[in-house]
Image 1 (tube, rainbow, N blue to C red):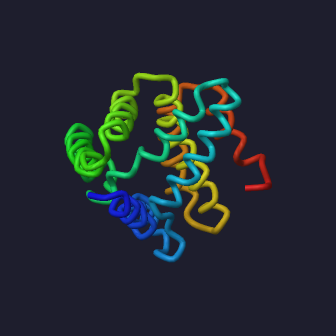
Image 2: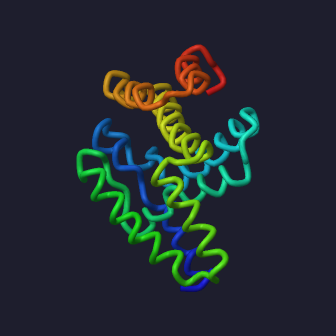
Length: 182
């Protein structure tokens, strides 16, 4: 696998829609967020919050950019479709496939970051996991503003609030309704 093949895999994320929106809320395919859309916003928000918190932003951004790359091979799954442990195993296998052909230094570096993310064992990995949920909640709010079913979208906000431990990030979700810019 060459660098161009990895770039091609990343391009695939642009055409992989996030299934939860379609299955649970009946979001129109034209409005459905892609994995690439989600990954970009997750990375941008990660950068902002990492800088605010004084974390290693370079590391956090790398983790955010890698966090859904395996979906270029396995696709997007909703939690109801697959057991979390099984998903982690197939994601890990896909990431090994993606990263194995890189030069050793890059492969080792990116694999280390990927494992940190999977195991949630650094402040930066924890941040990316929580921002992943924050971005989901922001997207749900945007769908609400587009006229999609608020009751069905509430599940996404509630899920994010249950998962996130950081009070500042929880506060951002709670402030969504007050913010007219989104």
